Length: 203
Length: 239
Image 1 (cartoon, rainbow over the protein chains, first blue to last red):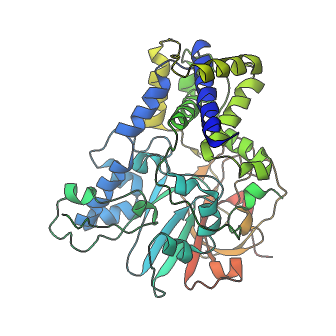
Image 2 (image 1 turned 90 degrees about the horizontal axis):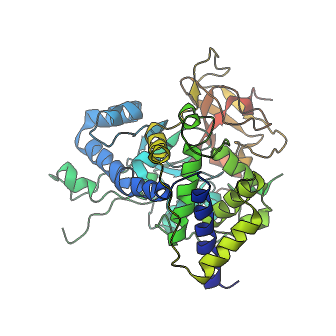
Image 3 (image 1 turned 90 degrees about the vertical axis):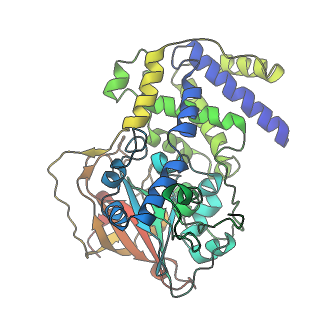
């Protein structure tokens, strides 16, 4: 099968499956749309970005976030369900000039849904999963991050029930920014340790 | 051994596709949504038992993983992430008798010929409410049981090397390796199914710290550590 007929087949196959599940009363015509909507509006990386921004401006909050991630998040005004599916047991780790953390799930694709939404393709890529655990510095270099030899690298393999995310380093040039402004520059990649937070030059 | 359990550390793979999208084809969202609905309607959940759905099975991550780990390992790398889900979930519905191969193939033909054919209409707000409520409440594996952890922070431990099973929670590269207990997580955790290699019943979980140089031998990267979350069943005192 060539690429376009492979995708056309997949698209028809999934529509056939969804259609039969609706006909048979397993799900409704709205179920799948509602799930997609939930991850577009309620649970996504925009929540994580707000958490990180707050941690950057409020050292006490950051301390609580590192010590007891769920209870610190619960104090924020975020949508109901921050300890919901794939967020039941979350933990945050902090990147500093001395320690760089990178998250990987070598067995599958475990990811903290409520704070980060769904995992991007690079995180699910078998090549990333294979290499990040063996040669994280080389992988990070390919992603554009040069980690100095003096900085310790910690790779977290999500192999049980904890879902990890990273508080990235606050970038220079953001002094005096509000939490709202800071949240706009935090990316899912930075919150898994695969990128640094960049400040757009146009700001 | 099963290749799917030994992905971590595999060499000779080349560059990573740094694709930042979650879905690269619109249809991928649909299979994701179906999987979430199945988890939300799984009959091990009390709230799902009283939801008016015709879904009468247990469906968790463990079931999806079992299918992924049961694949021919070379096929595993031929398909994109959500293609594996589509294949696995379709076979589950066929094998469990919810749909037949004939009707699924026939419907696929219809949608291949006329891709704008609309989906059937069936409304049952209780089903949709349960799906969203599941997403907000979750399904925590943490349970109340009076079980004391066997290991303490600072203990040097060895990771066991159990026989491969249908589904395994132990990354292959850690087998027979020594590490140090970094954190003993509070409480005990069960797993949705018995993996056959010790995981299933409530037990403690540990964060174990490993020196990358000891794991990989040939590592040229300085100051690199691996932290893995390991079920107690996979840990023993050093041999």
